[in-house]
Amino acid sequence: MSSQISQKHPKGLYVLFFAEMWERFSYYGMRAILLLFLLDNIRGGMGMSAAEGAAIYGIYTASVYLLTLPGGWLADNILGQKKAIWYGGIVIMIGHIILAIPAGSGIFFLGLTTVAVGTGLLKPNISSIVGELYPEGGARRDAAFSIFYMGINLGSFLGIAIVGYLGEKISWHLGFGAAAIGMFLGLIVFRIGSARHLTGLGDVPPAAISTPETVAQSSSNKKLGYGLVAVLVAFLIILQTTGTIDMTTAQGLAKGAGVIIVTISASYFLFILVAGGLTRVEQYRVLVLIILFLAISLFWAGYEQAGTSLQIFAERHTQRMIGGWEVPSSWFQNFQPTFVLLFAPVLASLWIYLSSRNLNPSIPVKFAAGLILLGLSFFVMVAASNIAVAGQLASPLFLTFTYFLHTIGELCVSPVGLSSYTKLAPKRYVSQLMGIWFVGASLGNLIAGIFAGGFDEENILQMPALFNQVAIITTGFGLLLLVFWKPIKGWMGGIK
Ligand code: GLN
Image 1: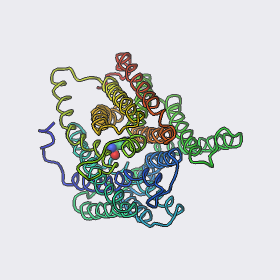
Image 2 (image 1 turned 60 degrees about the vertical axis):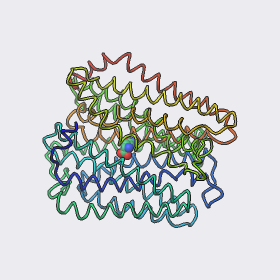
Image 3 (image 1 turned 45 degrees about the vertical axis):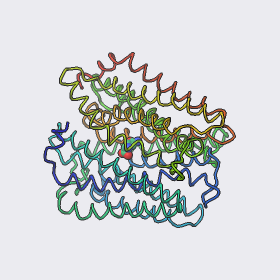
Image 4 (image 1 turned 120 degrees about the horizontal axis):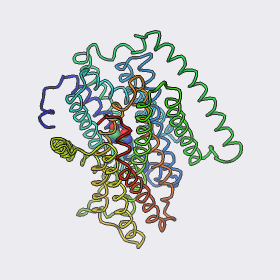
């Protein structure tokens, strides 16, 4: 790996690296203080209950990843990737500026929506342009994605450190303002750098170069899309009018969002399985993609609790005094990017070492390992929360170890998952299935938000049982994958 990384890469990669670094600075920085701001009723926050705040947090983070679907579509059909990244960045920056205005909930929600829309436009397109720098694919492209992943995590590290500090110690809105400055820097890097080093990439929307086949395909896709939206709207109206879900509350809205995400992904998978004109081998590969989709959604549902239940745990139940200084609770979220930066090269070398001995674990085994590590981390939280229930502050080592396990798990599933999606997807569905990969992140984030609703102060006694549930479900799914890894690997039809 290190020899691949040290190979010369095009300068365009570093433009994308720094642009994405600043975008993630703003995203993770703002996200680090978001729930604290929603729950705070002393320093000018929104004073919400944990259930309400966490539901809003879940809807927001889920929307960010769900909006990558229209964001990818706009780039493919109308804007081209470069413009999508540029306009997306501007919209994100405006969103953070709106959040920086201390002017009540209407303005706040407008800011949040604006950031989500902009991120949907930027995020999928900046990742796909990385791939386009290496039309030959192969090891250099993989190495480029590892470098890019470092940029993502360097940005989150700086964002959480700076925005977290400013938000918690000085003022929430100053923190949001710092996020806007980060995105501004990203825009400058992208403007100057892309003019010089990304010429000829992402200028023309791929759909503009269409053949009669792609036109016919896209018109039939459109009809199906409209049909799906109609069915979905009708279903949501039924749920609302029969009182099954009350979408006038934050929690109800979060459940409504869950219905939307699950319906979209289930119908999409069903559509390509039944009507996608797939060969038998391709159908089995899609089955594997469905299993990986479930696994990755579950993985993010636990992992993304860094911003919800684990954030609440850091704030209320963790010993944070060093000398006379109280460490900002949002800084605990920084263990994830820090550990990624430290351990990504280690894991990459481990896979290469194992491959050289023909021992590289298969994709389902890596996913199983990721889920089991995540599950174990929640058993650590069961122990930590028992201390909190006894009325004491838990040692910061519990969260540190929890995040260590999260990150090693992430490194088993996230980079591997993305590339396996591109490899297992039938060729003509690759970009749509990349979108579905982000939908998995959307679903996971939403569940992480809804789940943290149980973490209100008065429910403190339930905390160990709640963490125990996550631990059992994720470890259980991981073990299932481990038991069935051979047949799943068989369904992959020779893809490694
Ligand atoms: N941390 C990675 C990023 O921000 C992956 C996040 C995700 O897909 N949930 O890009």
